[in-house]
Length: 232
Image 1 (spheres, rainbow, N blue to C red):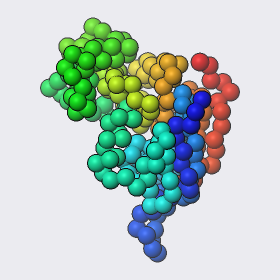
Image 2: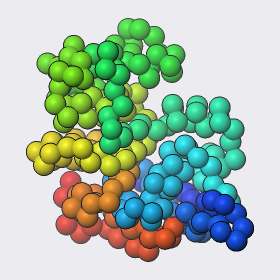
Image 3: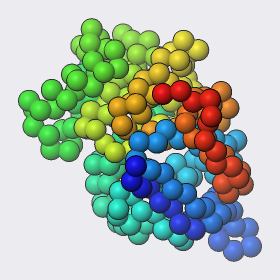
């Protein structure tokens, strides 16, 4: 496996000076292609800040972030937006679906922004929805689907154009236990297909389903282990 992500000596400081808050404090991290990683920490640990850095949603106060061979630490907002569109598929706790659009249209929408032609984006969207088990729900709107089904639409949207990184922020936070199992099985399946999956969570049980578990506390990585109980 080749290296996909490398973070070197990264800091993120809010309110610099006497009352500064070090949300990230000299973090170093490497993630290879086709890893399934859980980043776990309590509220205020720095995990959300680290997710923002990994997702190119924010830039560090200092340090370096190399994604897919490119130093993205100091890029402009427009350049970061291009990176997010091309290299990262986001899955959020709140689904972020557009109520007036069908499942198929929700998956298609980011592909329109990426300039994908109509025929190709329809093909990619149908493939993605079938992959997450929603072949029979493509014309349904979010209000006509369960929470678990809505999250599967969000996953289909994230994977439709096969970005190298799937970044899932508390993807099961609003779901019941049955839907949680379904979503985790889908993420595991994406990893088995060769995707790099990075899961942000506060839940030890959810983190235990990943192959590698990174624990963050007070802005520092305090543990980084391979899950010996993980089964592909």
